[in-house]
Image 1 (cartoon, rainbow, N blue to C red):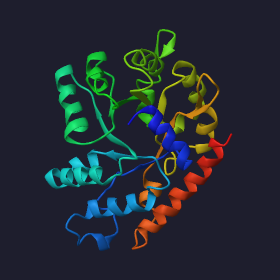
Image 2: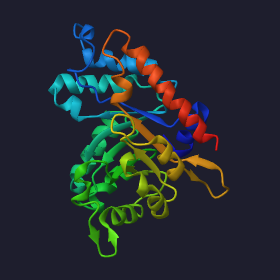
Image 3: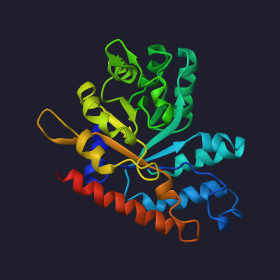
Length: 274
C-alpha cells in the first residue's frame, strides 16, 4: 500500500484506528473453542465487525508462533482474510544481518501478504535496508516504546541527545516517508512535539492507547502532520488491541468490539476535522 492510498483510506473512513489482533486462545470466548480453528474464527468475526471503522490491522506474531504450526496457519488465514483496503502490519520486530533480514522480508512481504513489518534497528543499517527494497512495502522501526525498559537504552543520553533521538534521525535517512514509519508509544505523549521536529513527515504507529492508558487526544494534538501546502496528512496509526478485541468474552464479543471501534472512530473523526 502506498502512502497516498493509506491517507485516502484515513480520510474516507474518518479514522486512523489500527486494530491489534493479538489473539490469545486462552482469552477468546469459550463457545469458539469447538471451532476447527478457534483463533481464526475469532479474528474473522472481529475483522467483519470492525473493518468499517479502522484502516489497519496489526498482527503480533508472537501470539501465533507460540502455538507452532497451528498458530502459523491461523496467522496466514487471518492475513489473507483482511481486506486489501486495509494496511496489514506484521508486528514481528525482526532485524538481523543483511542476508537474514532479506529472508524475513521475503517471508512477510512475499509468502505472507503483509504491507509492513516492525523492525528493531539495534544492528544498524544493513539489518533494516532489506525491508526497504520492496515497492509499496514498509519498515516500521522501533523508535520510542512505552514499556518500562525504554529508560534502559532509549532514554539514555548519547552525546547531546537521547539514543531514541539518534535512532530516529539516523534511520530516517535510510529510507523516506513512503517506506519508513516509526513506533512511538502513546504513554510517551510529552515527547511527540520533539519527535515531530526530528521526523516531521513520517507516519507513526502508536501503541499504548486503551488498556495501557495513553491519551488519544494528546497524541492527536501533538503528532498529526500537514504537507507543504498545509493540508492535513494525519501521519498516525493508533493501535488498540485488548480494549477492542476483548470488549466481551461472551457470544456478543464481535458486536461489542464493533461498538468500541466506533467510539475510537468517532473521537478520531473530531481530530481529523481540525
